[in-house]
Amino acid sequence: MTQRPHVVIVGAGFGGLSAATALARAPVDITVIDRQNHHCFQPLLYQVATAALSPAEIAWPIRAILRHQRNATVLMAEVTGIDTANRRVETTAAPIPYDHLVVATGATHSYFGHDEWAEFAPGLKRIEDATRIRRSILLGFERAELAKDDAERTRQLTFVIIGAGATGVEMAGAIAEIARYTIAKDFRRIDPRTARIILIEAGPRVLPALSNDLSDYARASLEKMGVDVRTDTRVTGCDRGGVDLANGRIDAGTIIWAAGVVASPAARWLNAEHDRAGRVLVNDDLSVSGHADVFVIGDAASVKTADGKPVPGVAPAAKQMGAYVGKLIAARLSGRALPPFRYRHAGDLATIGRRAAVVSFGRLHLKGFFGWLFWGVVHIYFLIGLRRRFVVAINWLWNYLTFQRGARLITDAPRERR
Ligand SMILES: Cc1cc2nc3c(=O)[nH]c(=O)nc-3n(C[C@H](O)[C@H](O)[C@H](O)COP(=O)(O)OP(=O)(O)OC[C@H]3O[C@@H](n4cnc5c(N)ncnc54)[C@H](O)[C@@H]3O)c2cc1C
Image 1 (cartoon, helix red, strand yellow):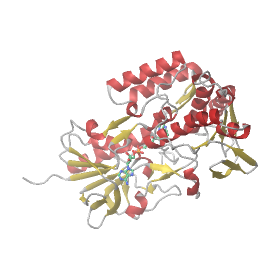
Image 2 (tube, protein in one colour):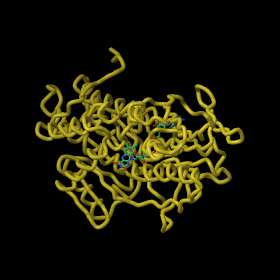
Image 3 (cartoon, protein in one colour):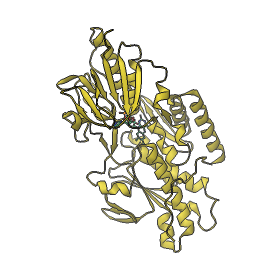
Image 4 (cartoon, protein in one colour):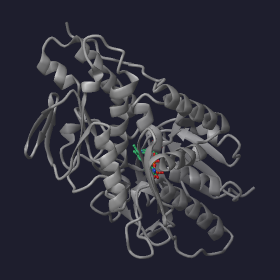
């Protein structure tokens, strides 16, 4: 028997999984490598960080997702490099040879050259980040209840979110809801409703990717919920006690980073040209210059739309690229060619809180309750598995009716110093 071509896919995020699925019927053997054993539905990470959902409701074992795809093997290992001369992927387990390689390793937080801030201002990317942020938020209220003086109480009840893109806006709205409703009556020495939630944005408006009217609506909704929105405000430092701004300081117990992203080291591994955010500049078939059988997709790739705009780092873009590359490899194996990759932008959406969300889908602009309903339906639709869709829908309905959040657990808390 002749050996079938070996396709190695690095990363089982939206892009990698979509590439694997597109190759389900192709005469290839696929190896999917990921350093985690689960695929994470990142758009709902903030719901884990704010105790509305549990980790298992938004993450799925990669093995289980690909269980029925007989030509796919899953390996849990960290990729450390790519040897293009010998066509193999270096991993923490063993080198893996490839005939075709798809790199879909995504992006991570960028602290704009201040990596030392990461310790005090965690970003949200993985399940571990979400549970760490959840712990920090919930501990803030617990520590405020124990505080011996007003200054410390106020500091513990101050939550700063840096960056007012979708994640920052969603986090700020959700923390405001926790303080104003969920735990409003659970404490005896403090009033959680006095918590300060401050959303800081260096640019002139929140949700800059959306139109002015939706952005204004989001800001007004946040302010109505008691969030202090500060645009045109630059952070100059983060430390254990708070945040330094170009125009002052905020003492805060919890700081959350939602400001910038940088691509995974794919460009370094491939010695490829990249943009300022580290994304590999790929050809119009998503292959890497000089390596026709190596593709970079999703958040790790720098791709332009037909009218020259950058393709945004969103899940639908990663999925479209994964599906395209899967089809392209299958087509090439059967001697066919495909036209260049074309991104189709579906739309933008972000939720701000109960009954408040913004949706921009072509000419469809929704806000308020209908936007919120639309947001919920879309997210449930994209979850994997009927059981999870059902569980998440019931959880949201329950949270909506009772103002509660079912996953208010502080786990792995550091021992308090006495
Ligand atoms: C908090 C948050 C909220 C978001 N909200 C939305 C939203 O509402 N709507 C939307 O469309 N998009 C949203 N996004 C963006 C969206 O999640 C990304 O665009 C999408 O996940 C990119 O897919 P990807 O396949 O390129 O990378 P990812 O989905 O990030 O997957 C990368 C995979 O590679 C693996 N990996 C990385 N490095 C290595 C390595 N060295 N070795 C082995 N494996 C590795 C990772 O474990 C991961 O599984 C959000 C992102 C975040 C972080």
